[in-house]
Image (cartoon, rainbow, N blue to C red; front, side, top):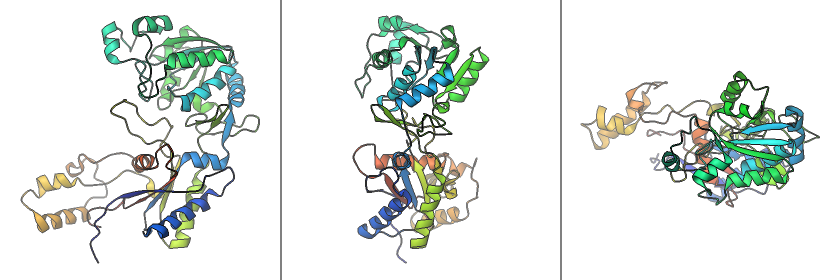
Length: 397
């Protein structure tokens, strides 16, 4: 048999436009197998089929409106003066949620973290903070003080001054607004004891600190729209986290109950090809942009559902370590054979072993989901399904 010359391949798979009620498992299976036939590649065991969360949520019809959010916020906070703290700066991710929150409250005290939000969107540069003699860990700034020190700071990529944008948005909903800047969650309690904490990955800690510091009511974004409101969609686990703007008055929520979907697609492919593939739903990848310093992961997790073969982390040897250390005296075919034998004989768990130093100790779903997010993009490629082949291969395959 000829030696394989290609390792991992990631292919965007074109699909029809998905609508509510579509049989997504059938569409995904058909699209992948039709692509394989058209492009002349074969399916293999342990290929990974990944579906972007947005088409899963769309097929589920998992939406809610600004008014649904407002009703839920009012019911859970009382609708008076509410602190809204640590939101991310995003027109797509948070602005429409903020409209719903504002419509459910009489006054919002909006507390923004600085110099950037949780995922790295910058409000003001660290150099400006240093020059102003500000300690971002402890200092609380009013809107007036922020403007006096730093003026207007438009987002590097979107050109939006999010301070003004969020303030105007709140007031346009008929809600009074006060804006402050702080990084200690308990700072909001000087203004109100009722808080919605909007951070994503630090939400449990923030809520714990607030309650321990005297907050009377704390609601996280994962607790808003975690049940239907007036017949709306919902997400029992993540609420508004992972949501995206659908229209000016509607939010597409993170998909729910996806396990059956990935298992059905896995079975479909096995029945039609005899190959056992892995399947996952993915959202944002988990990587950071070195230019804008933005960490991509605005979803609560990279993958809300996946087949069991994607549980765990890679267990890989570092080839350059072996080549430079264990087999430094070898070259050519002898080096290749020695490394191949090391891979075949490697331990089932390489944690702590020098030969695995420098490999990536992250969850498989985070790694593959990041690859898929980069492959499918967020625009007009029209490939909401990604097929990854050879990911689980090594040098010996």
